[in-house]
Length: 351
Image (cartoon, rainbow, N blue to C red; front, side, top):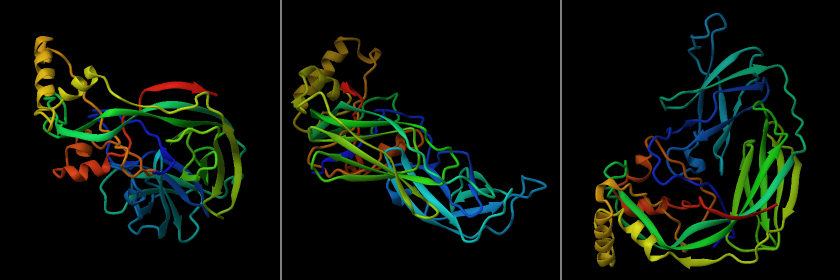
């Protein structure tokens, strides 16, 4: 098991999320620079979900509503994923035209594009960042998964696979909040190295974001970070922030949930999970006695099983939330995607 994972809390039943697409609307880049774009994934996010190519068109200077018929030649030279979502870097084959506006779209996809304009030059120098670093305890669902079909008729998951766990564990989350970020016109990517004591480090690349969070499954005396800015034009790297945080805790605990919590999870099932028929019937009976259908049942988040592989994958809901969880008839495929949910409750913070 790896020592650390990327943290990204996800709501249990978000049914109104946007689909895949660019995460910002406009950019300014130098004529000999690159377009750094953010990408919101529709399902579990990997670098393969970020567009491998863009179609870029120049806008007509006299009538901006008109686009040139022939796209600008260029290449997506880099794709990646961080706890803030996917990102990519597009480089034009030839210098762009200063003062010209452009529209970039994901090749072969009918969705909103990203606007950007070109300027003769843009400041490339990276800035030293002021970082507020804290270590926080999180609760993480863990252990064997119990799966069933959702019973919530008012939910987009009705009849869809739903999984939960009867165990919880704690993990340490290192949060970095940055001050002095470059502007949206930045030509830099961030490369952050996380390390707990002498455990193997984890490197995460991202575009500039206000904050980031990384999780560690092992307790340590120090949780450290090294942030480098890398030019998307020259490839040069500069250290812009580094430091370590000592936690105010000395253990990360694991425990089983209470009987009441078990009942709250089981009543979200349309039918009893295997081996839990008696508990399920008792929970449903208690629900009926306590108001039945008038009572709002909180749907349990999918969880991470402790024996599952852990990586830096980011989970994001798709349109309506439904397609993320209920759009798959194959339950094993669903479970493969459930890597890191149920992290919402924090227990303790230290600076």
